[in-house]
Length: 347
Ligand code: FA5
Image (cartoon, helix red, strand yellow):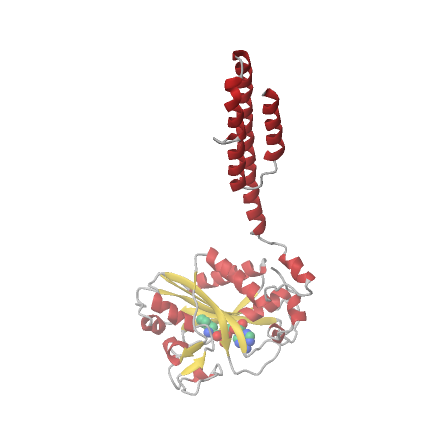
């Protein structure tokens, strides 16, 4: 009897590690430990044994039962773990995609220098508590001109050569200043926001002029804001972007939506101020227009100009990218030439 018991145990030991699934394990367990299992069948023969034999057989049979139960538990845990690992391996996130793409003879995409500069500008403004707004490329005459204190037949409408739609009421926005109006429609003062985006002008192209280029509009409205605040703010902004102090100069500039108005130039970083085709040999680059928001614009936007004031600016993003990455012609930025864009690739 004892020998038979050891044979059953041996059979169990060599089989338990081979069970590969939980349903198979249930069957295996029933075969050995179930009511009609091999162990019980042996126990049934105990009645023919002497008292002494019963004692020793019973003790060993109990040991074997415990060992089998432990071995089944251990193998069951392993089976569950193997199932989890197999599932994980199947759903594994493949982070080797850049290499794979290269293997396939294709190239991974990168960010265009204009996107990089725009994102960096947005990060700077977000860190200063500004909101980021958007405005439509196809705009109506009210938001692009009229609400900005540029009524019909005002000569300032000719300052920016406009792409008009056939209805003569809609146009491709000539500047991001439409975002000032869109922002005032949404917000109550005090507020500060910026809005980057594409603008369109029917211009003669050269190294620093494109027909579709990018601006970033900014507007800050609060109490007792004055020109020195604006100048300090813009200087800080530029040194943040260029990561060092750069020379700037402020000139009076006429924009009907600000009073007083200014144009801010920064030193041409392409020629170091010596003169080149980008700065038109003067050593300075026209960087942005700015000024104190005109009272007519505030009141048109539902804001009482006796209680609130502020400043606005419109920054040329393409020229900033040119200074930043030493690009000597704005038209490269829009050329779609991959050999050009490749040089600035980051992920
Ligand atoms: C404007 O567009 C005003 N809306 C800016 C403004 C906003 C003034 C708020 C006051 C208050 P301007 O036409 O100067 O201004 O353009 C602003 C900047 O866009 C310029 O300083 C220049 O950096 C850039 N820019 C202008 N024209 C072009 C062009 N054709 N190609 C590339 N960049 C340009």
